[in-house]
Length: 228
Picture (cartoon, rainbow, N blue to C red):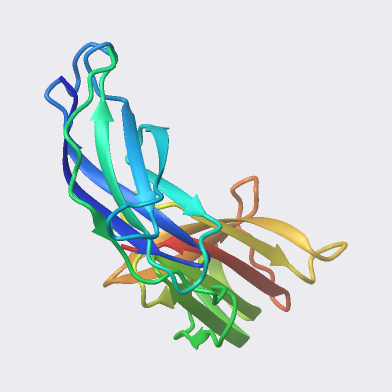
């Protein structure tokens, strides 16, 4: 028995749209030949799904349709198929916001409130900036600072706060560089973390896990993450 589709959402983005669905599988956790692992998505630029296209997607429960003309709306519905080829009922037709022609990198970034701390001890910084931009559920950020003082500092260097909380289990990518390190441009490990209070921060380490801070060194970091 195929899964039942509960909800379908369509989210318009930059020349693309993301289709996400929830479902109830009566055999969840059961034998693989009984569980639903295939979904069929029908989508169109017309509300009645005329001229539609169909794709088949393996779990998980989302897919991205690319190369959609700006200013149009994508309509979609979903149904499940089990291991034996039995098809479940179609969901209702869902639609989202107009697909945008504006790149997430265009326009102005917002100025965030710069904050810096260390795992133990204290740190001071100068020349600080923190800028971010939220596009849909994606948050792009950039920050730079120069360490002016360290007292008994160890552990991670935490930079924040970005007032847009990372989604629990959300995806992220970040990179950081010690611009004035030996030989310059020393790549550091960077992790985007939930800083509490609805804020997000970035933790910096050396790749061997040791403390990355040096007085007088300038640091730059950038990346993106998924918000709730």
